[in-house]
Amino acid sequence: MQTSKIPEVSFFTFLRHAFAIVKNPLPFHHKNFEKHGDFFSLRLGFNTTVYFSRSAAFTEYVLQKNHRNYTKSKIQTQDLAKYVGKGLLTAEGEHWKAQRKLIQPAFHKKQLAKLLGSIRAAILGEYQRIQPNKTIDIFPILNDLAFQTVVKSLFSGAADKKDIERLQYITEAAQKMLVKELRQPYLGWWFKLSGKIDSHLKLTKEARAILKRIVAERNSQPQRQDDLLDMLLEARYDDGSAMDEEQLIDEILILFSAGHETTSNALTFTFQLLAKHPEWQDKILEEYLSLKEETEDLMIIISSSKVCQQVIEEAMRLYPPAYFIDRLNIEQDTFQGMAFQPGSNLLLSVIEMHRHPKLWENPDRFQPERFDNGSRQFSSQYFPFGAGPRKCIGNNFAMFEMIIAVQEIVSKYTIYPKFDDIEISPLITLKPKNAYLEFKPR
Image (cartoon, rainbow, N blue to C red; front, side, top):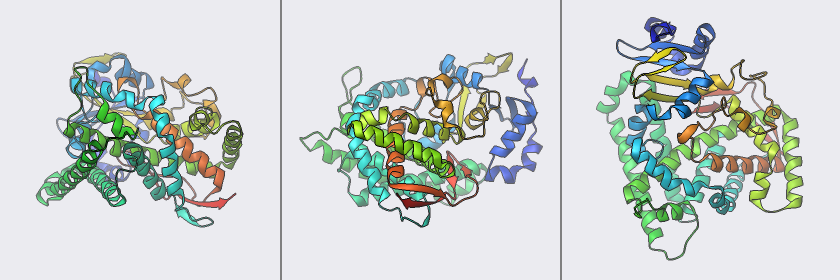
């Protein structure tokens, strides 16, 4: 069938629901998927149509089988890039290929093993802020935890507290500004005229200046730190050259942006689900204590933590931080009889795929045991880190960090829910709302 036969949701329907969509577009998407099936199109004005899909087969086709014909949209290649530069997340084409090949070795498991001590120390440091026997919103603590983990893994002890706090403030301010731009495109003229965009671009320049100073200090030191910064400084392209300073700063800013927000979101949802399902807290603790009796090697403990990994994977199925993936096709393409003209805007709904009733048994229920044999069996329908050549380069880093964070918390506390339902805020990533918990010492 032709694209004209893909069910179309009219612009007037969109306008009728515009206020609710700005607050949370997911119910609108879900209603249309339930009504029209795995594909529908939405006309946004005279010349713009967005194609929505919750087809796992189409997602696999776009991200893996025919990935060369699909590129990221301007949301990342332009809108985000103006704040963080042209790094792995925002680059395309040959530039992206060269950067991926250069940086990939820094995230191999053997290299990550050297960082586990720093990651654990950063986690334990943030857990000292937890007030036992009180109701607290855990998200701010986990947000800081995730940022500190990236910083410690990158810089060891090279950055002082003031610089770290400033870098975190700037990173999060830029993300909030980008959300406003994407959610309220009709105010683009005002954001420019009022100087809001310029003020955030100045903040980004300040962050770059801080990072350049840290890099210069590292280059002046004779001893290696064996952290991510050392690995990035020592990485070489095929011609033997190193990254220039601007490109290095771009990649560090990408690591800050992509490396902390998604992880803090996933951890918060995991903690909330554990609070609602305390039997899984007990299972994780039992596994952790058993492993610690056998070894103190952090990598062996993490690699053997099957139950903990199942829980995290199920949390990311229900609440994937990267809840949609956007792509544009370069040349005309067809899939199962549907034709897509060049430059079609595609939004692949990961959260809808992860809860698709034809793909999952009891799709809305928390059942970590479904991952008893690992997540690889679901690789054609489970995309928490994307898929294909552009799959998140930090997926192992994030998983190791989350396993340590979950094990350390359940070994010290029993988590109790102080909320009724898990609430979400779909921004650039799927963020938690009102994640109120109580932590009682064991």
